[in-house]
Image (cartoon, rainbow, N blue to C red; front, side, top):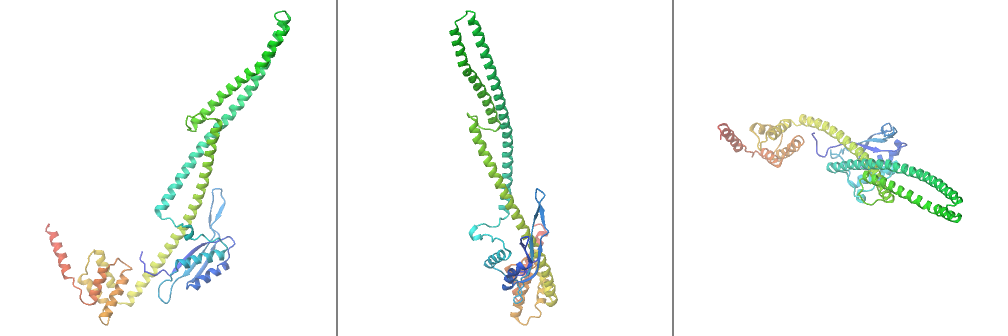
Length: 398
């Protein structure tokens, strides 16, 4: 793109606004620009843009477009607003539109991310998403295992109740049999009663021990299966230690979810800011390019011979030479024909060099040669002869 140093007169600002913002709310902002020599051109408020979120709800992108004329009619260049002025502008904007002022860079220490930093940020975001998905998968698996453990516990309770009922009935039947045997003289009544009491006294202990043993074996099987699925080390885990591990993973998952949500929100803000900057830059480049082409045409019409001089300079740079040919020298001298004396010709040389710098690459050596042409002291004979000698050597195989 062709540009002119110090020339970017028409600019457009994109400003976030609230749903109830009115044009008159910008009065303080417009006055601020006028006080600094910048003339407001137009103001448009946009309330009809936005996007649908994942739930189908409209997220409005309320913003304003403010066109500004930065042209300084005294110098012919654009007005420059320094960092301090731009910081004051942010305060004026926040006050005028009733919005929260952003934290100063000097306080927060934050800055825009460059391309490598943004790539690292995107990479970290992708990794965080992957980690969250892995935690979700493990927790889902653990939830199923927990349900299995609950079902197994319920089954053991039912079996325990049935076993207690069975033992009670069996004990009662045994006691009745021993009592009948005592009546027929197989043992004394007192002995029978004592045996019946011993049986009743010790039966619950044996039943309870069997239930506890069965319950412990089943629980250990479930705990072992959970440890295997969750990839825990083969330590002696209990329901309590598994619960602790589980809570740690749940907390980690929640932390990761919040971190991912924060990263997504920051990512949206960064993308919106970068899009606004890119759009503004592209529009400015297009406007400056059109202005530059128009100004060059006007210069060529006013300054006879300037176009030929610029073409001569472009020809030298394109060919990769460090000298002007005789034909190119004549074109440059033609642009200096209207100069009154050597000082005028030197000034012409400087002006030609400045204009050339807007359309091609220039350097100090080129500036020196233009001054030499202006003072009629330029000599390209030796450089031309050397190039001819090099050309002849190349033609005969040297």
